[in-house]
Each structure stands twice: as structure tokens, then as C-alpha cells.
Amino acid sequence: MLPTPGRRIADTGGNTGDPTLDWYTRFAAGGPGQSALYTQWAAGIVGDAVVRGLLEELPRPKRQPHLVFAVSRLLGAPELPYPAWREWVTTNWPALREEIPRRTVQTNEAGRCAPVTIALGLIAGPIALLEVGSSAGICLYPDRYSYDFDGTRLDPVDGPSAVLLHCAITGEPPLPVAPADIVWRAGIDLSPLDVTVDADRRWLDVSVGPEQVDRRERLHAALDIVRLDPPRQVAGDASDQLAALAASAPAAATLVILSAGVLVYLSGAERTRFDSAVAELQDTAGARWISLEGAAVLPAVAERLRQSAAGRPPEAGAVVLALDEHPLAWCSPHGYGLNWLGER
Image (cartoon, rainbow, N blue to C red; front, side):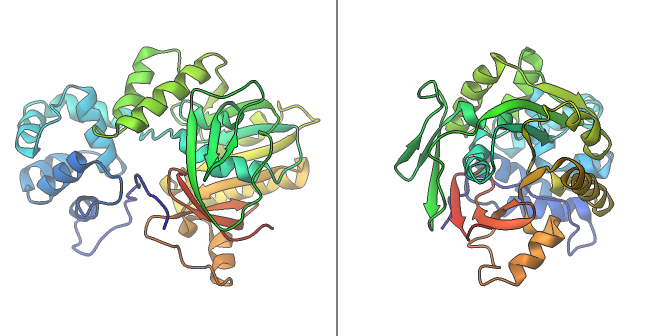
């Protein structure tokens, strides 16, 4: 079993013909580690045609539960049972309707660096790390965090980190004996966040569920680390910006492109464009690609899994750690558990 402290619910349509209703029905079903309060709010919306009608005023991609709930908290919604939250939402709907479209979901989770660190150990350094969907850049610092892989400890070269990431292991992955030698790091995001700006830190804070105290503490510690050496961040579409940003990486380093929990938010056509942009850098710059994504969003990964004995996820919500689209492990969405499949 993989511990799964949270999951993302992608808008993939539903069975009732009402996409908003289907989206909130799925979310209300809950999941390991999901906020109990958010689950209750979603269940309330399922039975509340008035609030669903308000949500219909938003662009469809902006109706996602995590986004709506986080923006409501950002603007002052009470962290109370559904009736109180509903009253606040209906009273303050004009402000919510204006603010929600400006925001994107920001689940910048340092825990994902645990499986990423294992994949980085398979790549010759030094490494130039380029993340797409980088948010505040927390996942660009896997070499600055400490890890506990079921009792096997890995620390940064300068000693234990304030961020200790636990990852339960099934199987025998090749655990690194030293952190990755990252000599350059940069990110691309539609709306990158600046860790030196209090308002951006506040948005990251409310993007964590109200009851997820441990995760919030880990977020704050990671933000403090990133704040000491903020990464270069570029705003824009990953496929459009990838080649230009990659060109500024040091030629002597291995360029590693990282995508973690971001491709699910792209359309099929956008994923195809991104795949092509990565393939071009693999051909011209020897780039490597580490992905931590749902199997369904990467056709090559899904096909290789179908051809293997480990093609089925160990539990609902698991994502795939892959290197150059070759599956390495099933993982919990935020990196707290890893089920090793084998090394390419």
C-alpha cells in the first residue's frame, strides 16, 4: 500500500451530463489524506443547486474544488461546516467570481522530491534542473532537503535540512548515496509565485487543506529554504518557453526536465505539443525527462505499463515516476510512498 495524503480530481466529465455536479460528486467521495472539511463542502455543493448555479458562472476549468475552496479561504471564508461556508459564499459571491479566474491551483509539494531524487540518482551529473509547472519552485531544490527512505537517511552535503521527507518504499530501488549535484535550476509556470512576496506565500498556504498541519509546516520550512536562493522563474506556456530557457543552462551539465503533477491540467493537444518540445531537447541537447504524473496523461508510459506485469496501480490515485517515459515506480501523488517497478 502507498500512503496517499491527498489527490487531485481532474475534470474528465461524468455520468450525469452535468460536469460541475460530477466533479464535486467525485471530490465528495473523498480519498486518503483529503481534507475532511473540503470533502464536506463538496458534498454540500452536490446537494445545493443554488451554489452550483453560481459556480456555473465561472469558466469550466476554474470550477475545480481545490481552487474554489482555496480562494474562498484566501478571501476570508470561515473554516466551518457547510452551512456557514455556504452563507459566506452566497454573500460574497461577486468578490469570489472576480478572484477565482485570476488564480491557478498551486499544490507545490516538497514531498514529490523523494521519488524525484531516486530518479536523479540514475542520471550522470552535474545537473541543470528545469521544472515545468514550477509554482514557487519548491521542487527545484531536491538537493536541499533531507530524506528518510524507510530508515535509510540522505542529507544535503552541508548537513541535515529543516525539511525531512519520509518516503515508504516497496521493492528495491537504487537509493542514492549522495544528493544530486544540481548546478543550475529554473522553472516555467503560467503564474509563477515569488517566495519573497508575502501575498504569494499566503496563496500557497491556503492551497493546503485546513487540517493538513504537517504539510503546512513542511511547506513553510521549504519556502524558507527557497527564499535564501530563489530560482529563476519564467512566466508562460511550457511548450513555448522550454527551448529558450533550456538554452541558458550550462552546456557542461545534463539538462533534466521535471514535470510533477502538472500534465493533468493540459488538454490532449497541449500535452502533444509538450511531448514534442521535450523530444526536441532530448535530440538536440541530450536532455532527460523525469515525470511524476498520472499514467493516463502519458501515452508512452501507459503503453509500457500495459505491457508489463505491474501495469495496474497498487491503489487508486497512484501516479507513475518515469524517466524518459520509461516507468520506474508507482508513487503516492505527493511522494510519500514508492512501489519500485525496476530500473531502465
